[in-house]
Image (cartoon, rainbow, N blue to C red):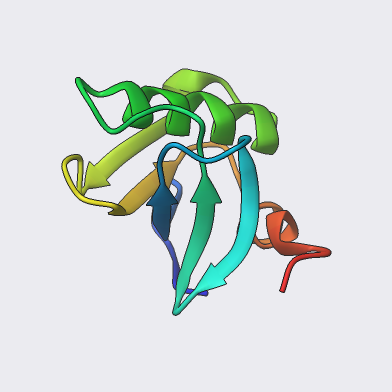
Length: 96
């Protein structure tokens, strides 16, 4: 999985699949964390749900999660402040 540690926090790639049956981490898609979301990809709904879901999954505030690249794309680069590389990698436990 592509993860970069910066002074601001952890940046990683995520492949978003909108209109899923539930919100879940679905493993890896290439070097990106695959995330299924129930929200549709209209008017920023999937982006908002992505931030909320990751904040809850990583146990950080929503304000600590930011889309730094790919707001209108399914592949996004996400910055998570106050998280560690290990915590982000732990999202993959039990996923293939």
